[in-house]
Length: 505
Image (cartoon, rainbow, N blue to C red; front, side):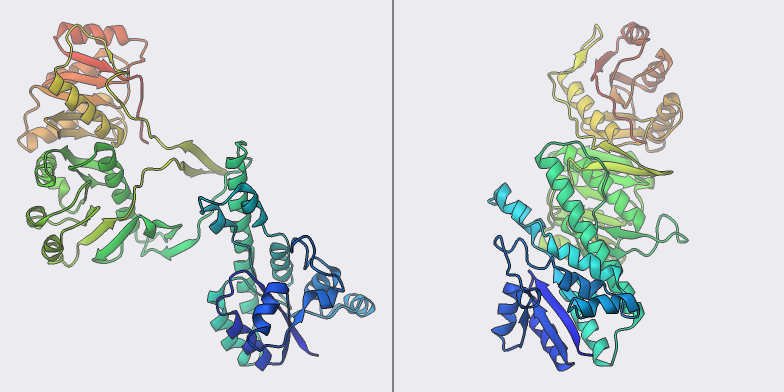
């Protein structure tokens, strides 16, 4: 029996190559209008679908493939006697290969000049139906949805027959393809019509497998378009943990602004600073915890130059990331073969949702994008912070936002002096930050301190005062705020309420 292939593609990449190979293997080719014209213009014999259905394409191509003779040919079971009988009665012949890719809906939404009506016209109807029908009947039908599949497919059918294993693989890829397409449409329309989401949809394509996850016994993959944000131009591939720390570092310097530096270790700041130059910022950040900085991830908000590169080479750093590097800096930094050098290509700051998996589903929240200006601050103590103290308070507040809760951050002159992170008690976080500062020869006297959440009792504030801080920034909102304010006044310490909490679990 003559074999038949149906071709209907928007992306015509390599479709001529596929069609010629099919013809060489004695396949009859049927195609929709534009695809048929494209094939005919290259000298390939093709039958238009309208000649099979006996019905023309209508409504400017909105309806062309939805017909029993087409879907019957795809869905018929070749070994089912009833199917074979009905096919003969209705002049339906089997279709063995279906090659379809969908209208460019996603591409059209990325065009700022596209109207909503133009976007809607790019919602494919017949295409997904053809793909799903073919994938459902994978026992008999091979379905192609991507030009990247053509070469391996051609090689296999030239050898004789497409294996069931290949048809299964193509079917899975087909359903994933239509699921991705429909997910994008659903997300677009919910956003366009300002409707609440009925489902939380993940819509990321596998980018690549990672060497392993948090630990060597855990498999890991990366999905989506991470490569659009970072270019690794030196060193080995990033690990799962590298990626988490890298994103934390870049998010922090983006909040701090130009000439800022963040050194991240295990998703917490080992040091951070902002100064008149990137070199000064790095040196100040490094002083906070040079021991923990070893093997850490360092990110910069501005260009890395030769002088900074020389300083960076004094210790081992897993990753150095910046928007740009001078040519001389690259030469110097590439002397360390095991270090990764990354160029940040675009901002990671996004309104995207954050999610974590839980038994039975996910929990989802907005990204924490709230920032402070001087106006909404509430100066609650008799003593007010000086101009420099206020500047340092705002700096410390940003660091606390990016530090695991419970977080206490001591800072002075635009640099962290001590960071206490991830403790069950805010008092313990204060003690750890103080201890780290002492270990590194940093004096907390006349420093400022930030707490990511309010003090439920005055004892947390008293611990910070005992460490040497003279000004404190915290959200406020405790039922014992008055007790905490009274303690600050008693010790002649200024305190500022933000009204905003920054828990990070």
